[in-house]
Image 1 (cartoon, rainbow, N blue to C red):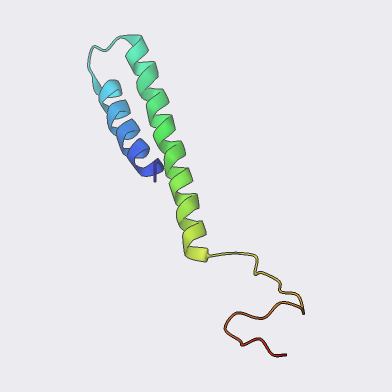
Image 2: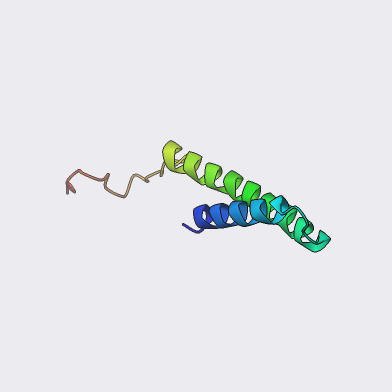
Length: 75
């Protein structure tokens, strides 16, 4: 939930800082760092999206003593 806003803010702020025509060198460095943070947040967001779309990789293993979901307990 945090990655998308951080991505947008870092991308826009970094782009503006690098885009100034007579910016101090510290602004250029900060802008490059913010653009790198936005790239990292893009990778994190993509990874989260893949995990959400794929679903759980490991299926739960049920033992013989526990009832399976959706079945009545027989005695």
